[in-house]
Length: 217
Ligand code: E4P
Image 1 (cartoon, protein in one colour):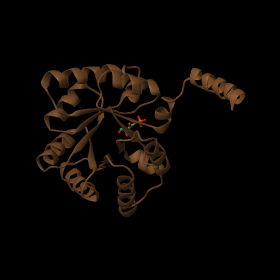
Image 2 (cartoon, protein in one colour):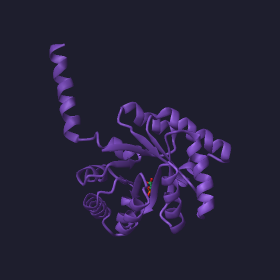
Image 3 (tube, protein in one colour):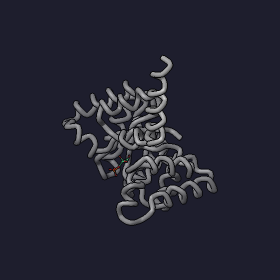
Image 4 (tube, protein in one colour):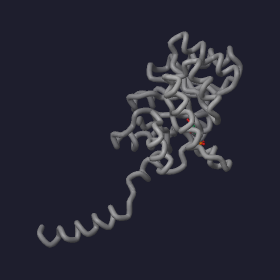
């Protein structure tokens, strides 16, 4: 399973990249706004910086919601760097646009997926990634992981090549469950990635080893 980090924060991207586990980055308009990036020039520069930091797929999201607008914006984003993946929302115009992008050699990440039906449509139009939002589904009292399992089964049976990108991760267990269920990628905040490191018995064991090491060093 590939690991993407879900942030536009350069320090966090660097920290995850330095661990040696990073395969890509996903951003969205909210994450860009959080970093205070404003205006086309600054946005382009920021994406370029991320692409130069991480050798992998970097998702950049369109904000247009009409076909022509999505195409124009997606073309601009794709021209920033060869690793840019155009992130397109799961709406009717988005589906049409993803079909166009696929036909024109531009890779897409279909975002805001909350159902198996949406995942089928994204696969049909050749999206490179489908992003089911696990955490937001859990937040609303449903089971996000059940959706990952359902999409994985459908894609397997149908032989779809779209990769399942488990998104909206809230904790380390989401990452583990996504791996168990066969998600191709997980995109996670740094905190949940670092959470994978933690186990109290590791800390207790290390403290004891270090204490005993003083006896013979
Ligand atoms: C996916 O690519 C989205 O950017 C992200 O995972 C959404 O997560 P959130 O529900 O924590 O905002």
